[in-house]
Image (tube, rainbow, N blue to C red; front, side, top):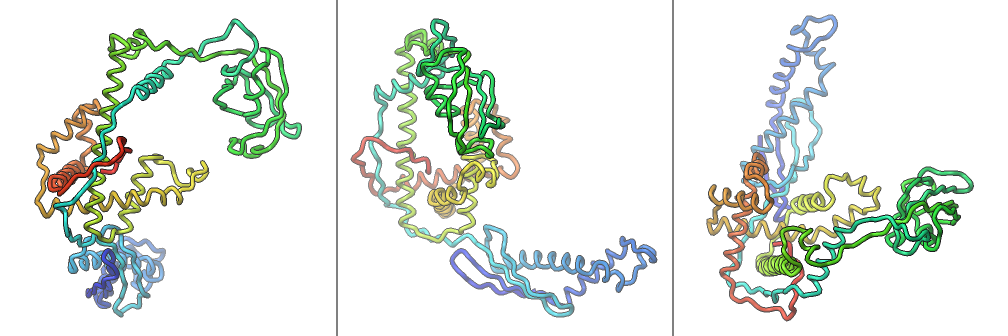
Length: 437
Protein backbone atom coordinates (compact mmCIF):
# COMPACT_ATOMS: atom_id res chain seq x y z
CA UNK A 1 0.00 0.00 0.00
CA UNK A 2 1.24 3.47 -0.91
CA UNK A 3 -0.35 6.77 0.06
CA UNK A 4 0.13 10.46 -0.60
CA UNK A 5 -1.48 13.31 1.30
CA UNK A 6 -2.50 16.63 -0.29
CA UNK A 7 -3.67 19.72 1.57
CA UNK A 8 -6.95 21.08 0.20
CA UNK A 9 -7.62 23.52 3.05
CA UNK A 10 -6.63 23.89 6.72
CA UNK A 11 -9.40 21.43 7.60
CA UNK A 12 -9.45 19.19 4.51
CA UNK A 13 -6.94 16.63 3.24
CA UNK A 14 -7.02 14.27 0.28
CA UNK A 15 -5.38 10.89 0.53
CA UNK A 16 -4.39 9.18 -2.73
CA UNK A 17 -3.97 5.49 -1.96
CA UNK A 18 -2.67 2.69 -4.16
CA UNK A 19 -3.35 -0.96 -3.30
CA UNK A 20 -0.94 -3.56 -4.72
CA UNK A 21 -2.65 -5.62 -7.43
CA UNK A 22 -0.88 -8.85 -6.46
CA UNK A 23 -1.91 -8.45 -2.82
CA UNK A 24 -5.53 -7.91 -3.88
CA UNK A 25 -5.44 -11.20 -5.84
CA UNK A 26 -4.06 -13.03 -2.79
CA UNK A 27 -6.86 -11.66 -0.61
CA UNK A 28 -9.44 -12.62 -3.22
CA UNK A 29 -8.00 -16.16 -3.32
CA UNK A 30 -8.38 -16.40 0.47
CA UNK A 31 -11.95 -15.16 0.20
CA UNK A 32 -12.85 -17.75 -2.44
CA UNK A 33 -11.39 -20.54 -0.27
CA UNK A 34 -13.67 -19.47 2.58
CA UNK A 35 -16.68 -19.20 0.26
CA UNK A 36 -15.90 -22.61 -1.20
CA UNK A 37 -15.94 -24.22 2.24
CA UNK A 38 -19.52 -23.14 2.90
CA UNK A 39 -21.07 -22.73 -0.57
CA UNK A 40 -23.85 -25.16 -1.51
CA UNK A 41 -24.24 -25.45 -5.26
CA UNK A 42 -26.29 -28.16 -6.96
CA UNK A 43 -24.14 -30.83 -8.58
CA UNK A 44 -21.09 -30.26 -6.36
CA UNK A 45 -20.09 -31.50 -2.95
CA UNK A 46 -19.52 -28.83 -0.28
CA UNK A 47 -15.87 -27.80 -0.34
CA UNK A 48 -15.33 -29.24 -3.84
CA UNK A 49 -16.87 -26.48 -5.96
CA UNK A 50 -14.41 -25.39 -8.72
CA UNK A 51 -13.15 -21.82 -8.56
CA UNK A 52 -14.65 -20.99 -11.95
CA UNK A 53 -18.09 -22.02 -10.71
CA UNK A 54 -17.67 -19.99 -7.52
CA UNK A 55 -16.79 -16.97 -9.63
CA UNK A 56 -19.96 -17.38 -11.64
CA UNK A 57 -22.03 -17.15 -8.46
CA UNK A 58 -20.02 -14.94 -6.10
CA UNK A 59 -17.56 -12.83 -8.15
CA UNK A 60 -19.21 -9.42 -7.52
CA UNK A 61 -19.78 -10.13 -3.82
CA UNK A 62 -16.25 -11.43 -3.18
CA UNK A 63 -14.47 -8.61 -4.98
CA UNK A 64 -16.66 -5.97 -3.30
CA UNK A 65 -16.08 -7.41 0.17
CA UNK A 66 -12.32 -7.74 -0.32
CA UNK A 67 -11.91 -4.25 -1.77
CA UNK A 68 -14.07 -2.68 0.95
CA UNK A 69 -12.00 -4.32 3.66
CA UNK A 70 -8.67 -3.44 2.04
CA UNK A 71 -9.78 0.16 1.42
CA UNK A 72 -10.76 0.49 5.07
CA UNK A 73 -7.50 -1.02 6.34
CA UNK A 74 -5.42 1.11 3.99
CA UNK A 75 -7.30 4.25 5.03
CA UNK A 76 -6.55 3.60 8.70
CA UNK A 77 -2.90 3.01 7.87
CA UNK A 78 -2.73 6.18 5.76
CA UNK A 79 -4.16 8.49 8.44
CA UNK A 80 -1.68 7.02 10.91
CA UNK A 81 1.19 7.45 8.45
CA UNK A 82 0.32 11.10 7.80
CA UNK A 83 -0.69 11.80 11.42
CA UNK A 84 -4.18 12.99 10.55
CA UNK A 85 -7.03 13.42 13.05
CA UNK A 86 -10.31 13.02 11.14
CA UNK A 87 -13.52 14.52 12.50
CA UNK A 88 -15.88 12.66 10.18
CA UNK A 89 -16.12 9.72 7.81
CA UNK A 90 -14.08 10.08 4.58
CA UNK A 91 -15.56 10.62 1.14
CA UNK A 92 -14.17 7.74 -0.90
CA UNK A 93 -13.76 7.96 -4.67
CA UNK A 94 -12.59 4.69 -6.18
CA UNK A 95 -11.57 3.75 -9.68
CA UNK A 96 -12.48 0.59 -11.57
CA UNK A 97 -10.95 -2.64 -10.32
CA UNK A 98 -9.08 -4.64 -13.00
CA UNK A 99 -7.81 -8.02 -11.72
CA UNK A 100 -4.05 -8.14 -11.41
CA UNK A 101 -3.59 -4.37 -11.64
CA UNK A 102 -3.00 -1.89 -8.84
CA UNK A 103 -6.18 -0.36 -7.47
CA UNK A 104 -6.29 3.36 -6.74
CA UNK A 105 -8.73 5.42 -4.71
CA UNK A 106 -8.85 8.82 -3.07
CA UNK A 107 -10.30 9.78 0.30
CA UNK A 108 -11.24 13.34 1.21
CA UNK A 109 -11.37 13.78 4.95
CA UNK A 110 -12.03 16.66 7.32
CA UNK A 111 -9.46 17.02 10.09
CA UNK A 112 -9.06 19.01 13.24
CA UNK A 113 -7.19 22.20 12.34
CA UNK A 114 -3.87 23.04 13.87
CA UNK A 115 -4.98 25.87 16.15
CA UNK A 116 -2.32 28.45 16.90
CA UNK A 117 -3.17 30.35 20.07
CA UNK A 118 -1.79 33.76 19.22
CA UNK A 119 -3.11 35.41 22.36
CA UNK A 120 -5.30 34.43 25.28
CA UNK A 121 -3.80 36.60 28.01
CA UNK A 122 -4.39 40.32 28.27
CA UNK A 123 -7.75 40.36 26.47
CA UNK A 124 -10.47 42.93 27.20
CA UNK A 125 -14.14 42.17 27.83
CA UNK A 126 -17.23 44.16 28.79
CA UNK A 127 -19.29 43.28 31.84
CA UNK A 128 -22.78 44.75 31.86
CA UNK A 129 -24.56 46.03 34.93
CA UNK A 130 -26.32 43.43 37.03
CA UNK A 131 -30.07 43.41 36.50
CA UNK A 132 -32.24 43.54 39.64
CA UNK A 133 -35.81 42.25 39.85
CA UNK A 134 -38.42 45.02 39.92
CA UNK A 135 -41.74 45.05 41.79
CA UNK A 136 -43.56 44.71 38.45
CA UNK A 137 -41.59 41.58 37.57
CA UNK A 138 -42.40 40.04 40.95
CA UNK A 139 -46.08 40.90 40.39
CA UNK A 140 -46.04 39.26 36.94
CA UNK A 141 -44.53 36.11 38.39
CA UNK A 142 -47.19 36.08 41.11
CA UNK A 143 -49.86 36.35 38.41
CA UNK A 144 -48.29 33.47 36.50
CA UNK A 145 -48.46 31.34 39.66
CA UNK A 146 -52.05 32.46 40.14
CA UNK A 147 -52.95 31.26 36.64
CA UNK A 148 -51.61 27.82 37.56
CA UNK A 149 -54.18 27.60 40.38
CA UNK A 150 -57.08 28.58 38.14
CA UNK A 151 -60.21 26.48 38.61
CA UNK A 152 -62.99 26.02 36.10
CA UNK A 153 -66.44 26.23 37.73
CA UNK A 154 -69.98 26.04 36.31
CA UNK A 155 -71.97 29.27 35.88
CA UNK A 156 -75.47 28.72 37.28
CA UNK A 157 -76.84 32.25 37.68
CA UNK A 158 -77.32 33.01 33.96
CA UNK A 159 -78.02 31.25 30.68
CA UNK A 160 -76.61 33.85 28.28
CA UNK A 161 -73.02 33.43 27.09
CA UNK A 162 -70.64 36.31 27.83
CA UNK A 163 -67.22 37.15 26.48
CA UNK A 164 -64.66 35.33 28.59
CA UNK A 165 -66.80 32.22 29.18
CA UNK A 166 -65.87 28.63 28.47
CA UNK A 167 -68.84 27.10 26.67
CA UNK A 168 -69.68 23.44 26.18
CA UNK A 169 -71.17 23.11 22.70
CA UNK A 170 -72.66 20.49 20.43
CA UNK A 171 -72.16 21.30 16.78
CA UNK A 172 -72.59 19.87 13.34
CA UNK A 173 -70.78 21.23 10.29
CA UNK A 174 -71.24 20.70 6.59
CA UNK A 175 -69.29 21.72 3.50
CA UNK A 176 -71.34 21.97 0.31
CA UNK A 177 -74.18 20.29 2.19
CA UNK A 178 -72.08 17.26 3.16
CA UNK A 179 -70.90 16.40 6.66
CA UNK A 180 -67.13 16.03 7.05
CA UNK A 181 -64.71 14.35 9.41
CA UNK A 182 -64.02 16.63 12.37
CA UNK A 183 -67.14 18.71 11.78
CA UNK A 184 -69.28 17.12 14.50
CA UNK A 185 -68.77 17.16 18.25
CA UNK A 186 -70.67 16.82 21.53
CA UNK A 187 -69.57 18.70 24.63
CA UNK A 188 -66.71 20.51 22.89
CA UNK A 189 -65.28 23.29 25.09
CA UNK A 190 -65.05 26.61 23.26
CA UNK A 191 -63.01 29.40 24.83
CA UNK A 192 -64.52 32.77 23.87
CA UNK A 193 -61.23 34.55 24.58
CA UNK A 194 -58.43 32.17 23.61
CA UNK A 195 -59.87 30.67 20.44
CA UNK A 196 -59.26 26.96 20.25
CA UNK A 197 -61.30 25.97 17.22
CA UNK A 198 -63.11 28.17 14.70
CA UNK A 199 -62.81 31.93 15.06
CA UNK A 200 -66.30 32.54 13.66
CA UNK A 201 -68.00 30.24 16.19
CA UNK A 202 -66.08 31.78 19.08
CA UNK A 203 -67.06 35.27 17.95
CA UNK A 204 -70.72 34.29 17.55
CA UNK A 205 -71.21 32.69 20.98
CA UNK A 206 -71.43 35.78 23.26
CA UNK A 207 -75.12 36.74 23.65
CA UNK A 208 -76.39 33.29 22.71
CA UNK A 209 -78.71 31.37 25.05
CA UNK A 210 -78.14 27.88 26.40
CA UNK A 211 -79.86 25.01 24.58
CA UNK A 212 -80.90 27.23 21.67
CA UNK A 213 -79.36 26.24 18.37
CA UNK A 214 -77.94 28.93 16.11
CA UNK A 215 -76.33 28.82 12.69
CA UNK A 216 -73.07 30.36 11.60
CA UNK A 217 -70.92 30.38 8.48
CA UNK A 218 -67.26 29.67 9.23
CA UNK A 219 -64.03 29.22 7.32
CA UNK A 220 -62.13 26.02 8.11
CA UNK A 221 -58.52 26.87 9.13
CA UNK A 222 -55.75 25.99 6.67
CA UNK A 223 -54.06 23.89 9.37
CA UNK A 224 -57.19 21.81 10.04
CA UNK A 225 -56.38 18.09 10.43
CA UNK A 226 -58.87 17.17 7.71
CA UNK A 227 -57.08 18.67 4.74
CA UNK A 228 -59.98 17.80 2.41
CA UNK A 229 -61.94 20.75 3.82
CA UNK A 230 -59.10 23.00 5.04
CA UNK A 231 -59.61 26.57 3.87
CA UNK A 232 -63.20 25.96 2.74
CA UNK A 233 -66.40 27.69 3.90
CA UNK A 234 -68.59 25.57 6.17
CA UNK A 235 -72.08 25.86 7.65
CA UNK A 236 -72.41 25.05 11.34
CA UNK A 237 -75.38 24.43 13.62
CA UNK A 238 -74.22 25.14 17.17
CA UNK A 239 -75.99 24.45 20.45
CA UNK A 240 -74.39 25.80 23.67
CA UNK A 241 -75.21 23.39 26.54
CA UNK A 242 -73.28 24.68 29.56
CA UNK A 243 -71.40 27.80 30.63
CA UNK A 244 -68.25 27.64 32.73
CA UNK A 245 -65.77 30.28 33.83
CA UNK A 246 -62.25 30.45 35.13
CA UNK A 247 -62.02 31.25 38.82
CA UNK A 248 -58.74 32.78 39.93
CA UNK A 249 -57.67 32.75 43.58
CA UNK A 250 -57.05 35.96 45.48
CA UNK A 251 -53.38 36.81 45.92
CA UNK A 252 -53.13 36.81 49.71
CA UNK A 253 -51.53 34.89 52.57
CA UNK A 254 -53.74 31.85 51.93
CA UNK A 255 -52.67 31.85 48.30
CA UNK A 256 -49.02 31.76 49.42
CA UNK A 257 -49.70 28.88 51.83
CA UNK A 258 -51.42 26.90 49.07
CA UNK A 259 -48.30 27.19 46.92
CA UNK A 260 -45.91 25.71 49.47
CA UNK A 261 -44.11 26.23 52.74
CA UNK A 262 -44.77 29.96 53.03
CA UNK A 263 -46.28 31.67 56.06
CA UNK A 264 -47.28 34.83 54.24
CA UNK A 265 -47.62 36.54 50.89
CA UNK A 266 -44.63 38.72 51.74
CA UNK A 267 -42.47 35.64 52.26
CA UNK A 268 -43.56 34.32 48.84
CA UNK A 269 -42.76 37.69 47.24
CA UNK A 270 -39.26 37.65 48.71
CA UNK A 271 -38.71 34.08 47.52
CA UNK A 272 -39.76 35.06 43.99
CA UNK A 273 -37.53 38.15 44.10
CA UNK A 274 -34.59 36.05 45.23
CA UNK A 275 -35.11 33.48 42.46
CA UNK A 276 -35.41 36.21 39.82
CA UNK A 277 -32.24 37.90 41.06
CA UNK A 278 -30.44 34.55 41.07
CA UNK A 279 -31.49 33.98 37.47
CA UNK A 280 -30.42 37.48 36.45
CA UNK A 281 -27.10 36.94 38.18
CA UNK A 282 -26.52 33.72 36.24
CA UNK A 283 -27.52 35.40 32.98
CA UNK A 284 -25.22 38.30 33.80
CA UNK A 285 -22.33 35.92 34.36
CA UNK A 286 -23.11 33.99 31.18
CA UNK A 287 -23.22 37.22 29.20
CA UNK A 288 -19.84 38.21 30.60
CA UNK A 289 -18.31 34.84 29.75
CA UNK A 290 -19.69 35.13 26.23
CA UNK A 291 -17.98 38.51 25.88
CA UNK A 292 -14.71 36.91 27.00
CA UNK A 293 -15.09 34.09 24.47
CA UNK A 294 -15.95 36.60 21.74
CA UNK A 295 -12.67 38.40 22.47
CA UNK A 296 -10.80 35.08 22.45
CA UNK A 297 -12.30 34.11 19.08
CA UNK A 298 -11.48 37.51 17.59
CA UNK A 299 -7.82 37.20 18.61
CA UNK A 300 -7.39 33.60 17.45
CA UNK A 301 -9.06 32.99 14.06
CA UNK A 302 -9.05 29.54 12.47
CA UNK A 303 -11.10 27.59 9.95
CA UNK A 304 -13.80 25.40 11.46
CA UNK A 305 -14.53 21.90 10.08
CA UNK A 306 -18.02 22.16 8.52
CA UNK A 307 -19.03 18.69 9.73
CA UNK A 308 -18.49 19.73 13.37
CA UNK A 309 -20.81 22.69 12.86
CA UNK A 310 -23.45 20.44 11.29
CA UNK A 311 -23.11 18.01 14.18
CA UNK A 312 -23.59 20.86 16.66
CA UNK A 313 -26.70 21.97 14.77
CA UNK A 314 -28.01 18.40 15.09
CA UNK A 315 -27.54 18.62 18.86
CA UNK A 316 -29.28 21.99 19.06
CA UNK A 317 -32.17 20.72 16.93
CA UNK A 318 -32.56 17.71 19.19
CA UNK A 319 -32.61 19.96 22.23
CA UNK A 320 -35.33 22.12 20.70
CA UNK A 321 -37.59 19.61 18.91
CA UNK A 322 -36.50 16.20 20.20
CA UNK A 323 -36.52 13.14 17.98
CA UNK A 324 -39.11 14.43 15.50
CA UNK A 325 -37.99 13.38 11.98
CA UNK A 326 -37.32 16.20 9.46
CA UNK A 327 -40.17 15.07 7.21
CA UNK A 328 -42.60 15.30 10.15
CA UNK A 329 -41.31 18.78 10.99
CA UNK A 330 -41.92 19.78 7.37
CA UNK A 331 -45.48 18.43 7.64
CA UNK A 332 -45.92 20.63 10.71
CA UNK A 333 -45.00 23.67 8.64
CA UNK A 334 -41.44 23.98 9.96
CA UNK A 335 -38.81 24.82 7.34
CA UNK A 336 -35.97 22.60 8.58
CA UNK A 337 -33.39 24.08 6.18
CA UNK A 338 -34.26 27.59 7.33
CA UNK A 339 -34.14 26.53 10.98
CA UNK A 340 -30.71 24.96 10.49
CA UNK A 341 -29.54 28.18 8.83
CA UNK A 342 -30.74 30.21 11.79
CA UNK A 343 -28.91 27.89 14.20
CA UNK A 344 -25.65 27.83 12.22
CA UNK A 345 -23.99 31.04 13.57
CA UNK A 346 -24.53 29.98 17.18
CA UNK A 347 -23.43 26.42 16.37
CA UNK A 348 -20.20 27.67 14.81
CA UNK A 349 -19.63 29.90 17.85
CA UNK A 350 -19.97 26.89 20.14
CA UNK A 351 -17.54 24.82 18.05
CA UNK A 352 -14.96 27.62 18.01
CA UNK A 353 -15.33 28.10 21.74
CA UNK A 354 -14.83 24.40 22.46
CA UNK A 355 -11.82 23.98 20.18
CA UNK A 356 -10.06 27.12 21.44
CA UNK A 357 -10.58 26.30 25.11
CA UNK A 358 -9.52 22.70 24.54
CA UNK A 359 -6.32 23.93 22.90
CA UNK A 360 -5.61 26.28 25.81
CA UNK A 361 -6.27 23.44 28.26
CA UNK A 362 -3.71 21.32 26.39
CA UNK A 363 -1.11 24.10 26.31
CA UNK A 364 -1.54 24.96 29.98
CA UNK A 365 -1.89 21.34 31.12
CA UNK A 366 -5.36 21.93 32.59
CA UNK A 367 -6.70 18.67 34.00
CA UNK A 368 -9.84 17.28 35.65
CA UNK A 369 -9.31 14.56 38.26
CA UNK A 370 -11.65 11.75 39.24
CA UNK A 371 -12.43 13.71 42.40
CA UNK A 372 -13.43 16.70 40.25
CA UNK A 373 -15.80 14.51 38.24
CA UNK A 374 -17.29 12.96 41.39
CA UNK A 375 -17.89 16.42 42.82
CA UNK A 376 -19.61 17.56 39.61
CA UNK A 377 -21.84 14.46 39.65
CA UNK A 378 -22.88 15.27 43.22
CA UNK A 379 -23.63 18.89 42.24
CA UNK A 380 -25.79 17.73 39.34
CA UNK A 381 -27.62 15.25 41.56
CA UNK A 382 -28.36 17.99 44.11
CA UNK A 383 -29.51 20.44 41.44
CA UNK A 384 -31.73 17.95 39.61
CA UNK A 385 -32.85 16.24 42.83
CA UNK A 386 -31.83 12.87 41.42
CA UNK A 387 -29.89 9.97 42.98
CA UNK A 388 -26.13 10.15 42.46
CA UNK A 389 -26.19 6.66 40.91
CA UNK A 390 -28.65 7.82 38.24
CA UNK A 391 -26.49 10.82 37.29
CA UNK A 392 -23.38 8.67 37.24
CA UNK A 393 -25.02 6.10 34.96
CA UNK A 394 -25.90 8.89 32.49
CA UNK A 395 -22.17 9.61 32.11
CA UNK A 396 -21.11 6.02 31.55
CA UNK A 397 -19.81 4.26 28.46
CA UNK A 398 -19.52 6.54 25.42
CA UNK A 399 -20.36 9.56 27.60
CA UNK A 400 -17.73 8.71 30.22
CA UNK A 401 -15.37 11.58 29.37
CA UNK A 402 -17.97 14.34 28.93
CA UNK A 403 -17.87 15.71 32.47
CA UNK A 404 -14.06 15.75 32.62
CA UNK A 405 -13.96 17.48 29.24
CA UNK A 406 -16.52 20.06 30.38
CA UNK A 407 -14.56 20.77 33.57
CA UNK A 408 -11.34 21.24 31.58
CA UNK A 409 -13.04 23.78 29.29
CA UNK A 410 -14.49 25.67 32.26
CA UNK A 411 -11.06 25.89 33.87
CA UNK A 412 -9.47 26.99 30.61
CA UNK A 413 -12.07 29.76 30.31
CA UNK A 414 -11.42 30.79 33.91
CA UNK A 415 -7.72 30.97 33.04
CA UNK A 416 -8.54 33.43 30.24
CA UNK A 417 -10.72 35.46 32.64
CA UNK A 418 -8.02 35.50 35.31
CA UNK A 419 -5.60 36.96 32.76
CA UNK A 420 -7.85 39.68 31.34
CA UNK A 421 -6.16 43.04 30.86
CA UNK A 422 -9.32 45.06 31.42
CA UNK A 423 -13.01 44.63 32.17
CA UNK A 424 -15.26 47.37 30.82
CA UNK A 425 -18.78 48.27 31.93
CA UNK A 426 -21.78 48.40 29.66
CA UNK A 427 -23.97 51.49 29.80
CA UNK A 428 -27.18 49.49 30.08
CA UNK A 429 -28.62 48.08 33.29
CA UNK A 430 -29.99 44.92 31.69
CA UNK A 431 -28.20 41.91 30.28
CA UNK A 432 -29.87 39.63 27.78
CA UNK A 433 -29.44 35.92 28.52
CA UNK A 434 -26.10 34.75 27.13
CA UNK A 435 -26.52 31.02 27.30
CA UNK A 436 -23.45 30.27 25.18
CA UNK A 437 -20.57 30.21 27.61
